Every structure is written in structure tokens, then in C-alpha cells.
Length: 232
Image 1 (tube, rainbow, N blue to C red):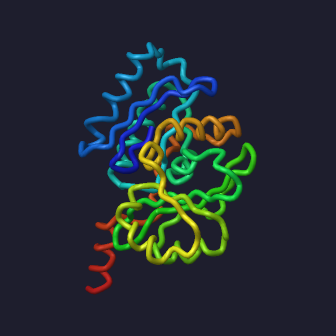
Image 2: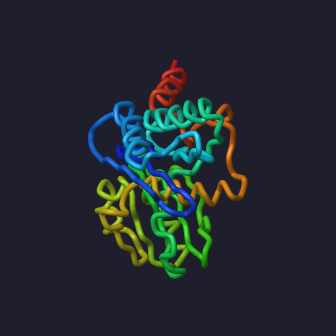
């Protein structure tokens, strides 16, 4: 599941096959949509939820509220079912939409982090492996564009940062690039599940009690409080 942005998305992966995916990109709070979406999928495919092996969740970065809802949902299910959590990095999960894109291209998800900053990372695909070229981080959009020059490869941008920063990219990106088509341009639980399955097979999971989201930076409220205290 992924609720790291405006998108709410839930999927089930069974033995390498996506048996269901429910994705909504609309202005409703995830606290209202995530569990009903999960319940609908369980009913539709007649899933005995006790038979699942693990729960993959987009673990951050992203919206602070969205991440808390997703992690709390995954954590609650994990505790109730005694199942492990696979904490899939949000940016890596988005990049996994483009598995097998080719070795001449890098995938660069960008999520709007406000104040001309993005949550981002850079990924490439080599054979059957996704390679992290640049770890997910929060940075200024222009700093990112400068870093992309180092890779000398075509770039695919995706994420909710694209419409926000498209003009800056068009004016200042110095490498060949394209924007992802609509069906691959946002978070997909299917990609979180597929990458989660890879991580699970490598032992990259944790107990529900251990799980917590990765915010990458402090919330706006925390930053404002620090500034206020510094000025006092």
C-alpha cells in the first residue's frame, strides 16, 4: 500500500502476479479511503488475509500525514495478523514502475516538497536489477537538475513534482528527458508490492512493532518551532 501523496493505492501480489490493484488520485483523506479500498480488494478476490506473507508499505518520504496513515494501517494489520512489514522506500517504489526501461535511461521520481524542493532519487535498471544511482533525498529542484548532468543519460521524470516544476525542467534541464505517461506518472501499489517481494526474498523486512516511516526531513511545524526558538 502507498499513501505517501495525494494518491491512495492498494494491491495484492501473489507468486509474482498482481491479482488486484485499487488506485485513487482524488481529494479525499487517506484515513477515509485506505481501509475501505483494502476491504474492497479482499472481498473482490476472496482473499483470506491471514494467508498473506507480509505487508509492503511505502515508508517515505512523502506527505507527513499520508505516511503516518499508511504506516499506522500497515502496522495495525501487521500486529493483528502477526505479519512482517516490508518498508519500501517511496521513491524507489515509484521508479520501479519503469522496470526494464533500458540501460541508457535513468528514472527520476520527484515529489513536491514545497519551497522549490523535491523528494527525489535516481535509479537505473541493469538486467534484472534496479540500481540506486542516487539515494532518495530532499533537495532544491535546480540542485537535482545540476546533478543529473553527471549521469549523461536520458531521464524520465515522474511524480506530483512534475506539474509543479515542469517549466523549470524545460528551461534548465541540460540532458535529454521525458515526462512519464499518465498511467505510470504517480505511485502504484503494484510497484510497491513487486519491489516489496524482491526485498522480502532478500530478508529486507521488519516486525510490525519496529516499523516507522522515514520522513527525510522535519515537518513544517517542527521547522517553524525551531526558527521561533532560535529567534527567542
